[in-house]
Length: 458
Image (cartoon, rainbow, N blue to C red):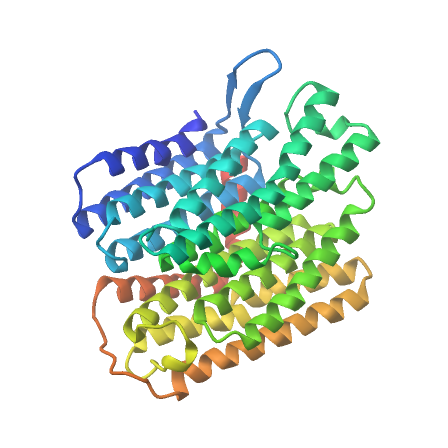
């Protein structure tokens, strides 16, 4: 039964693409309806303890199951995808909109398959589908040669890292005769070392960590809705989720923790400094994404996967919001360059939504971004890595600085061209999302723990 959680949006994507629907409202309603049903299926799956297994042969069996982290992630994917898909239906270009909506649904289904996977071969199928969907989505406006080139660059760059997951799967199967996650716990020391190295390599490439971070900037050539979903709850989140899901196994290799921390801190510093200097709004947010996932790597490396998951959830909400608000402002300004914006006085709804997400990004209490970063620092301190905690604090200060740049552009710079406040659904979506964010930030993380506990213990 659990297969339905991933298969439903995957099949719906095919139906939407094959249908004659071209109207924005119809496409938006259909896509959001699919995501709502997927969300309900995910809740039922958790409540009823759904599992799934397909026996292709005696050694080759595809398994899906739910853990605490996979329930949280599966819920997150559908919840974040809802406003993003609605935004796409309202704001993205009418040309090939049917194709865009169907690809977004396919993207969601692929990510859900990755999330519920309980063996390396099922994980690989979801992993590769997510990569293929990202290529198609980044290059959606394929009439532009530069965007098609960016899609290929992102695909090839992440594929280089994906080789690590293939190696990990081959090592597990050759030693244990199975791909099941449960079996890799008993791997011998040499095999486990190779497996962990492969998984860490793949996770770093998907989550835009050094040295793979440049693909995140090329991915900004895709539509805004694609950037919002890719950076918040799907492809870029896949790498961090993989480490969170398999942390008990990864932690058995002594060098994993220090390696993950070094990768994460290095990326957090590099991403933060890049964001401070980046004049392009979407690329600034991309650098910020890389930096925040770096902090998640630090938390996992320090032995606190739950802290990394907390940060992942908080980041997904405020980063999706910031991308969507940047999309509204960029469309009105005909440019994503900060020097050509300045929309606070003429787009108050968008500016307010940006402020909420930006304060969370900067880690201002009582928003969830503050709690997420605080937990990461506490995890590092609990591990008695005080120097690393100081470096982490520096990354937070840097994020506050580049958020000040955004605030200056929004509220103090004068617009470089006439803006019009459009009272359309796109802005209403942003307002609703920002309101939900405020509520979540004040009661989070306790409500998240309560919901997950209820689903798993029921």
